[in-house]
Image 1: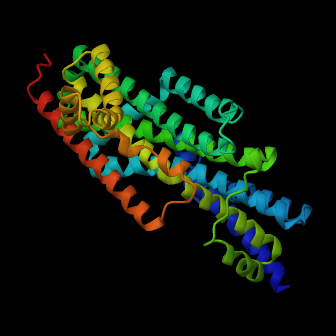
Image 2: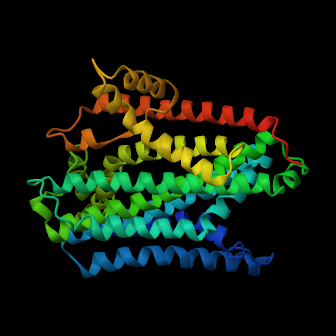
Length: 404
């Protein structure tokens, strides 16, 4: 009886968690979804809606628990539950993040929210998203790479590259078009009369555009995490084993004893999904760091340059930022002019090669956790500092720009 009560409580709790995670983005999509009339009738209506939301979250767990007694398959559905919860948390982070920004910095937050909505509604956003999903989930997993058993590593590296390029390309295009058009079209003059300062306008634009890039990165990485697992699970691709996490294995037995076999397997599958997400997170963080630097440069240049010139400049900076180490290496002991130019580029332009995960992926043995965590933190700090410098330069350029 105690075991059945514990299992029932577990399934109710899992449904409640999903229901709570759904509230922020549901309210954002439709503000009237939980708005009711005052009085006892309104309270009953509110409880009925919340109860229905919890029931929707509980039913899948109960269904899989009582119709499928195989712990392996229940663990699989636990992973699906984790994936759904993770996607809802992604949406909640953006909803609550913009709400916090509007509360802390109202004027810049309003500009950022408007820029975010404008970016998400653009057809170019969905076109780049669709092409990236096709490349990651349909094309790259099926191409032969002739790498003698290293195809899986190739696909991981290509996936990181596609996510970074998609976010960076859209960020550059959006910044070049949005800011340049508002300045040249005199729309910025109207904003400045609200009153919104130039600093609030430019930083709000950057936060909104960077938010769109982060949203694209998060959604693409969610699909990419799932597609990698599907290929490994059902195609048994190159006999590559499913990922395992040593830190998670001891919890399998503990949860089976405390919760029961099926709830324990479900909880293990849920935790395993989040472990897989954490294992893929460093590449996603580095990719977004590179995209954020490029967006900051595009925002700064957009205060002075027209759209086409800005896109060309950012493209050149992207290639030079990645090729500068190669130029420095091939010019050692010869080609003094190339060596000098490589030093100049290395001093002024961002070192985008720091954000490359290729070396870590193609290693035969995993990188030590401690040193790699230090490297990840250092590169992330470098991205933040370079972004701040680029935005400071943009503020200086924008300060005396004639908007009339």
